[in-house]
Image (cartoon, rainbow, N blue to C red; front, top):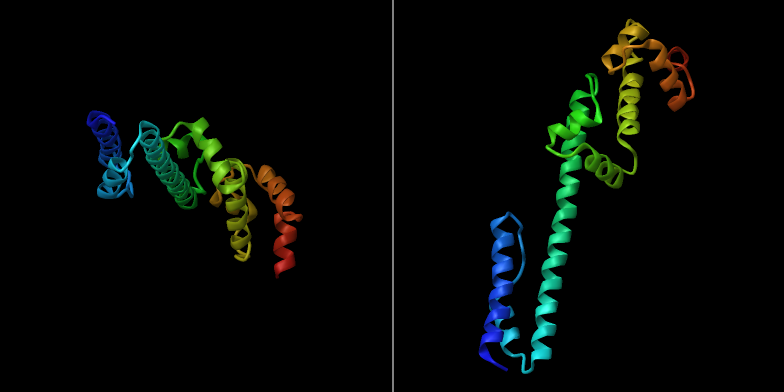
Length: 175
């Protein structure tokens, strides 16, 4: 087998690996072992199989890293939501905060958390409201504003949907 073909295959994989590392990917590939395995290929068919093996390896590494990166992005979004649940929160605001297209973020958020964005935010707000209902001096309309709702009627309806009781019924139950 011509030496040029082997050198081309080796430099192709080295270049791809170098370029991925330069772009922040932590690729685990031992270049010395890869070079030895490629050079031990006796036929063009063997070399092609080895190149395919290494390209598949690089592809899997990228896929695994992207999955981890997606999880990190969703975790950043969740941290932002927890810190800002009482404010004006929308899918667009959170997506903008993490520098992501809102449509893609919506799909990614659902994939990683198992619930859509608005259901997640609503659940967080209602959980916080349940905590605040222990403060018996706090009026329901004040409480609803503290958890990001401006309409006590809307807040009460959502609370009842999720908890099964109105905020006032819940408060009376925990007394």
